[in-house]
Amino acid sequence: IQDVYQTTYETCGQYWPHIHNYIVIAIVLMQVTMIGLFGLKSKPTATILTIPLLVLTLLFNEYCKICFRPTFYRYSVQ
Image (cartoon, rainbow, N blue to C red; front, side, top):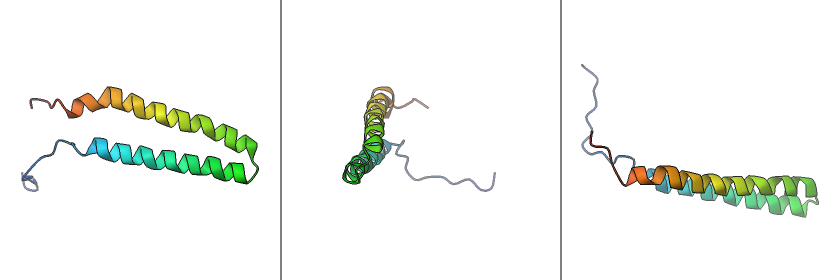
């Protein structure tokens, strides 16, 4: 086999939970900003419809923590 790249170290994706948290924080910050912007622009419908998105984003973050975080602490034997 010719083009095989051998890594000198393997992190097993240990940094991914941190990246996921940063992405969720950015999404929540964007949604809160949009809720404030819609409120300032006197768009009550858009403001009300954006609030469930914020709640669903936070629920998705908790779901990911429950389902996937344990796999980053217990690695496979392979």
